[in-house]
Image (tube, rainbow, N blue to C red):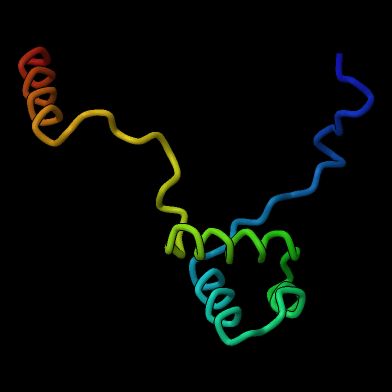
Length: 91
């Protein structure tokens, strides 16, 4: 049973995926000293989304979300060996 404070699917906000082009534009406008609220209004984004895009760029130097997902724990040589083992076992 759902608790009263948990919103059901019909009342939850839909999340928008921000495209790379919008991220680039947000960062370039922020570099031109445009206010975050004005940027948010221009692209119909929340101010917190604009703030997160800018903060991620300032801390990591990346404009994209390429760092999502689990990092590999194997180096390139170990990956090659593992692929060979898997291929041998599938024959």
